[in-house]
Image (cartoon, rainbow, N blue to C red; front, side, top):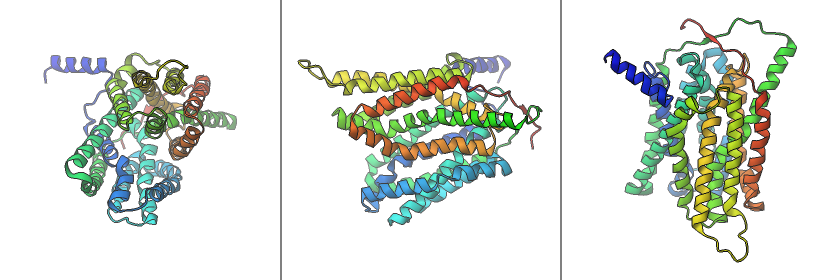
Amino acid sequence: MTAATETRRRCAASRLGIPELRGHGRFVTGNLIDSVGNGMLLPLGLLYFTDVQGLPPAHVGMAMTVGQAVALPVTFLAGHLMDRLGPRPVVVAANVLSALGFTLFLFADRLWQVAAVHVLVQAGINMYFTAQRTLILHVTEPGQERAWFAFTGSLRNIGLAAGAAAAAGALTVFGKGALWWLIAVDASTYLLAALCFATLATTPPEPDGTPPGTRATRTGHTRRYLLLVAVNLPYVLAQAALSVLVALYTTRALGLPASAASLLFVVNTVIVSGCSTVVTAHLAPKAPRRAVAAGYLVMAAGMGAFMVPGLPTPSGLPSFAFTAWIALVAAITLFSVAEILLGPALSELSVTLTPEAAGGFTQGLYQFSWAIGMVAAPALFTLLLDAGPLLPWGAEAVACLIAMAAAPALKSADRHRRKDPR
């Protein structure tokens, strides 16, 4: 590659907000493969156990919930292991654990076994995301944290979409009998991702040399990080709403076809995967706390837009599905823009907010907010939806506005330097 070609490549990457990828091929590949595995099977787990193994849907759903709940404390175990071993071995172990869990899907034909395999799978997911943010600091250049968080977020959306498309294609061509093979292939993808991560070279960040501070200072750091965990919860619930609430709302409350939720998910995936790096690099506020505040304002507007089709139609005026679709597309667009603003900024804050932010306990605590939110969201949203079709969106909008008001207090600590590679 000539110098001129290299310069043009760097300029194009800079305009698109893409970080420097040279030397990071295995890291990028590992992230992409892990996401493909998630997209390929996670939405089909319930279908496999009901249609292939012949178990009752309600009982399977309860077993899945129990398994995921039992795996909640794994975030703290993963954090402890990360402090002892570093993030790379934890990420590798997480993918191996997920591969084992999905392999055991093939032999689980009783409800207690369904719960057990979901403990393994969810434990792998919790371990992976507890360590993945810190691993980004260990394999990339200083000062590019948010660019990498945006880029890996785009990769995740692309991988999820590719995995879901592959699964849909296999089911269309071969029918539900393809589920067995999808599970086997999925388990192998996690092993391949583990191999990619296992061969990475890592360079841990070095603290800036400032003393640890007084007990009052450390207490202040802890309180600030707990505030971040609380501020993150509305974003977790918003992400869960995309997979739990949208389908129920569009079909039951609005009377739209079942494909509506899938189409809205496609719009979200296209916007996030195509625009994350550009928006993060050129349009998002540079201070992460300001990006969080802006993101929650946009998210609250998106929740309001979701409410519009469910509002009572004034007497004498007809109700049109076309009008509902306009509101829903506007809502998912606002949702996607908010996701682009919030995701990378919250991830950056999770590893930079305090001097200990990238450590195991704090990352375990941050990931616990994700795990507990995802477990609680189905029950919370369905309960609110039964009480009224507008209540879930209104409650989430209020939560977003409260988080927006709290965001200015999330001022990051000083940056970290690098040690020599170990």
